[in-house]
Each structure stands twice: as structure tokens, then as C-alpha cells.
Length: 251
Image 1: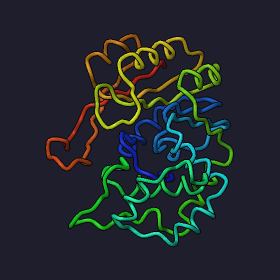
Image 2 (image 1 turned 180 degrees about the vertical axis):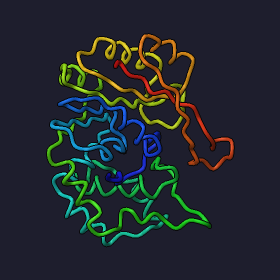
Image 3 (image 1 turned 135 degrees about the vertical axis):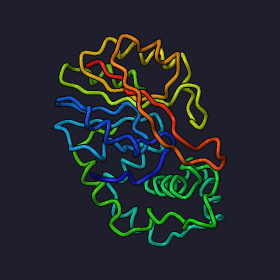
Image 4 (image 1 turned 45 degrees about the vertical axis):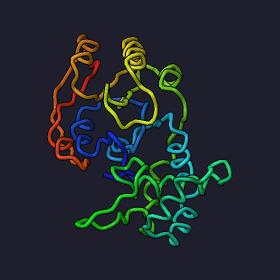
């Protein structure tokens, strides 16, 4: 079971075993909202696999790991955790960077920022700086895992249209409803479009989302399981603790 090379808001590291246990038989595995890819990296490889995310920098990172992991690791040998470096990377004009350097920038900002949001430099008096991106051979297993995977950067609607078959399985982890922290807009309109697309699927889906009365109403015709997840990534005590989430399936 691999670990993701990045952390990400809403990542499924705490819930992935429950999700993996619920995945049905399938030929083609598709993740509509890849994020950190905890479920993908944790499960056994499927015959055909597709990962997708609307975030161009995230998808560029995984493309570069797939094709140029050794060069990324070579360049990371010269990096260290520093606030000035973090701010410099954050303010770069990415239009002047190569795809490899864009990947390094993204990897640095995500792994050395507070809560993996890439916004504020992460520091503390009881924890060491994240060493994840500086480990030699860190990306080798990730590269091998990505070797036979289609990497897409499209809207979820287009991915469903392209890959939906009776033998397809979609893992859906969209931005949570009425929850802050996401860069891309994903409100009620987008959630309803997703629900309608899933409603007419030929294949199977598993969706994870926060427990909200509107969500329960949208998906009342499907199988809904309630789970508790313990979140601790917050400077404020009220942002920590156990939260209810829903696992929704059409099987």
C-alpha cells in the first residue's frame, strides 16, 4: 500500500481502507477528483486506470513523476525547508518555468505548507519540517504505479462521458458541500450536475462527501453509509475532532 507523495485538503488517508474494501469488481478504475490519490495509491492496480483532476499544476506534477521522476529527485537534493524559499516559489510566474520546475514548485509548496494548502509556510515548535520531498528514491514507486495509468486534466462531466462503460468503476471524492478550503468553485449547481451524471451511469460509483441534509436528499435513492473521520489539521481547536461523512454507492 503506497503513500501519496503529497498531502491535500480533503485527502482520504484516514478513510481509504474502508473505501478500498467496498470497491466492486471492475475492469476500468476512474478517479474523477484525484487530489492526493490516497485510494488509488492504496488499492491493488486495476487492469485499466484513469486519474483526473481539474487542477493543472496537480496533474502536471503526476505527469512529470510518471516521465521524469529521477530528474525531479535530482533537483530536490538541493532544496531545504525555508520560509524565504517557500515565498519565492509561491510568487513565481509559472509561465516562465519548465514543466519539471513547475512540478518541483508544486511539490515544495504543498508539502511544506500548513494543511497542504500551498498558501502559508508550515512551521511549529513540536514538529519537524516535512522531509517527504527530500528523501532519495521517494518517487520511484509512485512512478511505477503511474506507468500504466491514463492521466487526464478534464472536467468530471467529460471524463464520465469518455470512460463510462458497464465494466467501469468511478471513485468520486468531490469538494465537500459548503466547506471552505478549495481553490476551484464547486457549489450546489456543480454537485447537482455530478449527481445527475452519476444517476445515469452504465458503470458503478462510490462517492465520499460530508454529511449534509441536502446531500442526503440528493442521493436518497442510492445506498448511503455513515462513517466518522477524525480530522486534526487545524490551528483552531474547533476545527479538530470527529466528523460524519457519507459513503454513497449505486450498488
